Length: 323
Image 1: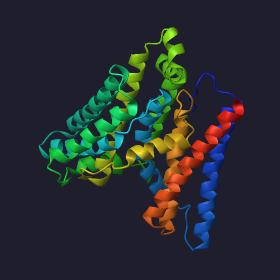
Image 2: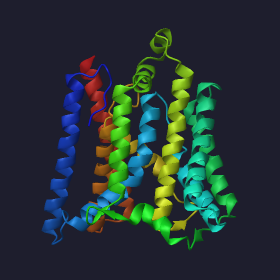
Image 3: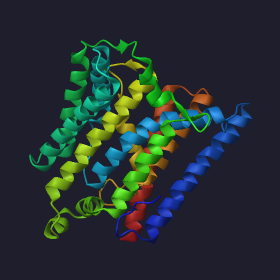
């Protein structure tokens, strides 16, 4: 399963090998360290926890990757997750059928994505400012919709979205992630939309002169980012069966981190969507391993920050060597 920019060369292939080697290295490191302290890292339960914990960020990170590939940034996705959770929760408590509540929740996230896209593409508002503002709006709505109170006691079928099992004990979230990443890999490598995203992110002026409808392409990336954030919000609501207006706090940073660790260039136009999944799994493995070792949360945050900086540093060094 592979999605790639048209100009991808040997240096980028070496970057992919480094990514996979890094993922295996982290797994090996935690396996040895946990064994030293009398704990087990590579157990079926831990693997399931890593996949389940990573699945929501992995889904959100698809949208973040699209925006970054288009040369932008989306800081609103974490707040959209929280807003969608409260919005969907209120719909369910009001007697709305599950399928309708999910569709309306997806629509709500897509509206926020469209707002971001319009402001950036047509309003020429810098992406950082536009999505920072919509982040505040979405979080404010999450607090306003139920006056800052959480919601619980949902219909039992809600939990089946995330807590059902397939092929024995495998979480159904594995199926969601595989299908979505496979679909987006095909879209980015086989369709005009995917080629236009790479072209626009790599060189907007050249893309415009080549006939790419750059405003529409850029806006589409933000619309999809809102859609995937809403999907992540539904998955989180199902997993917890609990809607918290503060849910999703920091998810935007984790989604961006998964993309960057996976090799998506912050300069735009270069990277592979499937590798974002590897980045999300690396973050999930770090979190799970540090939890097994009883490392305090604030140290876990520091380690994640160091990994992000290291990923960007290695990427930039590779770019300088290629010049």
